[in-house]
Amino acid sequence: MFRLKQKHSQNLADRQPPADGRRLLAEQSLVRGVAGSIAVGLLVCWLWALLFTTTGRIFPWFSVLAGAIIGIAMQRFGRGLDWRFPVLAAVLAGVAAYAGNLMVGVLETGKYLEAAPINVVGGLSTDSMEYFFRNTISPIDHIYAFCACGVAAFFANRRLKRHEVHGLRTANPNGDEKD
Image (cartoon, rainbow, N blue to C red):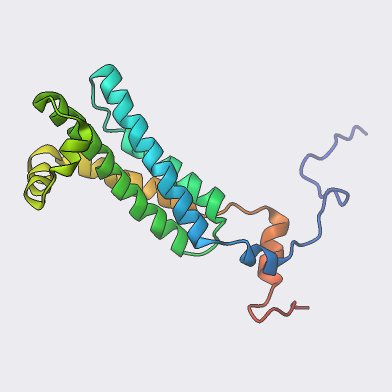
């Protein structure tokens, strides 16, 4: 008698043909992904240090935010579909988490010694880095860095639409289309 419109029925007009799987694989670029993630990671570390100098407070959760931004940068620049992109995003996020803490430490040391940050960075040695990791980095910083790695790995792979997944699965690694 009364019939409501079905919300989940297949609308054949909205269906798209499968995407070209070979084109999707050719769009991957590990070099662009790493270069973009490094640039974004440096920018986020700089913003973290700027936030510290402005407020005078250290925000350890900023490393998780840096991990998310690095993962998204890897996704956008690298357009990766395989395991290499999340692994490299996780490594870069871990390095960025510790580099951000190091930048904050360099700024604080420069303020304490009344020296320019570039002079403090020039005076870094293996002993000072060992001291930094032993006395400045706390277990909570390691936890935040680990979380940043996980978040970066989660966001690093390219998100595909349904027709792209279908095109990728029907593409043969040899370049021939499956029937």
